[in-house]
Length: 187
View 1 (cartoon, rainbow, N blue to C red):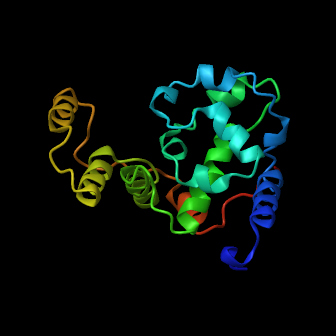
View 2: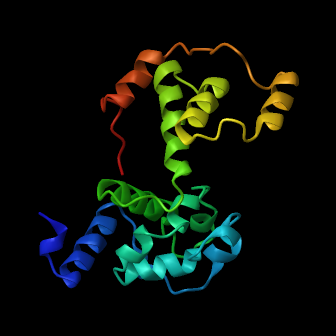
View 3: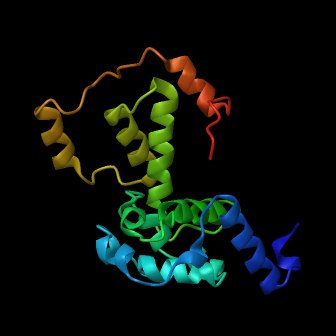
């Protein structure tokens, strides 16, 4: 169904159903603020964590989909750990990023999805992250070829970055995961 043909109320209900299907109960939030106060990257958000949960509870997905917050969330789950109602806030951010990409909404932080693509490409190829290859891929995609050059050189000189990739034994299992044939887990 095309989202432009449904009313705002129907869209809001559809959004809340999607969250409920993923066991994310934003309606359980009573705005204690523990999630926001514990967020290690919250100072960089345009909408704090508590506000994001409240906006989600009100079905205000458009405002959330266009925010910087959903892209800057580190998914560290500190917010969910601190939440007395065990709301899966990192899961909420995942759903919002997924919806934004699916709808073709340009990410408010465009380099973050580029980094994710480079990371996943490295894991798909080697079964693990090969840092130099991953960063090279990211640098080419982002166009920022010289940024962090000193840091990279310093890490290389200290032996933190390997020139050649190191594959893993279970590479076929990783390929199955990327093909959608990974293990099914109870949710």
